[in-house]
Every structure is written in C-alpha cells, then in structure tokens.
Image (tube, rainbow, N blue to C red; front, side):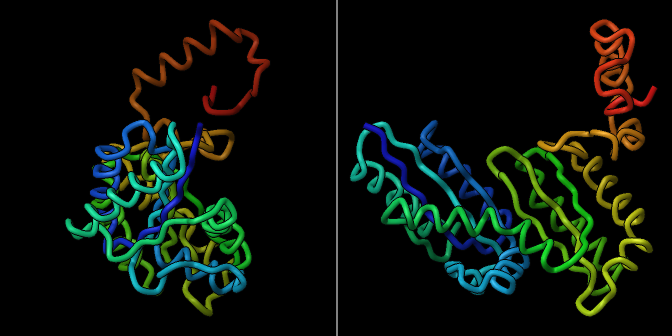
Length: 255
C-alpha cells in the first residue's frame, strides 16, 4: 500500500521553517517528499488575484510551509506520523498552527495555492525573477540580509519569495512598489536589483541559478559568480563532447 498526506503549517520566520524541515527529516526520513516555503507577500498576491482559492492562516504568520509525506503503509499510519511531527513542531515553537488535508482533493487544493504564486505575480505585473540555490542553513540569513538591502535601496519594493526549501532552491522575486509603473521600475532598477541579489547569493555561498539553469540570459553573468577552475572544467567538457559548438551555442558558456 501507498499513502500520501499533505499538511500546511504557518511558521513565524524563515528560520522556523528551516527548523521544521530538520524536525520533519528526523520524524519522516525518506517519507518527506515535499517541503515548500511561501512568504506572506507571495500568498497575498494569490489571495488578491485568485480569490476563490482557500489559503489557510496566511494572514496570521509571515511564512507558510507546505509539506508532503509519502508513506509505505496506509492512510492511518501516514496521518499518525504527520500529526506526531506537527505536535512536536508546535511544542518547539516551529509552527503556530497547522492543518492536514483529509482527502486527495484537499491536498490538491493546497498544492494549487503553491503552484499559483507565479500566476498571481504575473497578474500583478512585471517583476524581476531570481531562481537561486543556497545551503539550507544559509537561507534565513540570506533572506533577512537581502530583503533589508533591497528595501533600503528602493523603499517600498516588494520581495516575493517562495520555493523548495528542502532542496535549498528559492524563487526570490522583486515586484515594484504599489502604485509604481512596473515597466519603468524594471528599466530603472533591474540591473541594480540583480547585482544586489547575486552579490548576496555569493556572500552566502549559493548559486545564482538553480532549477531553471543559466541559459542565455545569465551566460555573461556566470563568470563573476562561478569558481574559475569549475568554469574551465565546464569548458573542457564542452570542448570534448561538442568540439564544433553545435549544441546550444551561446548558452551557459560564453566563448
């Protein structure tokens, strides 16, 4: 038999989300198959542009976590394991409140909220996207530090962060201040925003690109944030496998 259980928890901080992740790994082991964190600003956009979606507790905590357990036994066993985790998390102060989906449809509704963040951002207007990777332990410090840098440099700017916390992958997107012209904001501030974010990623030991890769857009930026030895190894492999530069020319490695 195979059973899945999904839970939604509100957490008081990114650090509490990381603490919850550690606790979930202890309690659930390999059964932990999903762990997403979502900032209140990200969920606020979903509430604004997709008002029919039910978002648990989103106004009562700065962050929410969506976690999934895949159990090899049965529904009751999965439910008991997840409830034991949430009880331990409540006792430790990692979470303020939580709800466990009681059906497949409820689970899908929770995941639909998470998957609707990008759509809600697009509906809000143009924004500056960053798909980054960081050591999980560094994510709270990165978020606090970079949020402060951006809001100091551009008062009123909105930082929308969410992502696969269990993988150290964070979508860290920047939306213009409310009432500002989004296209003008991007034209004026995109280079500055990217520089601040990428420098901060580097300072916290991360990578400027995660699941979406380098492609063409970041190919000229990569050398500033990648170890020169690693870059040369990449070039050597590229040369060995594709000496005529036929495969994806111009992407990842600038020649």
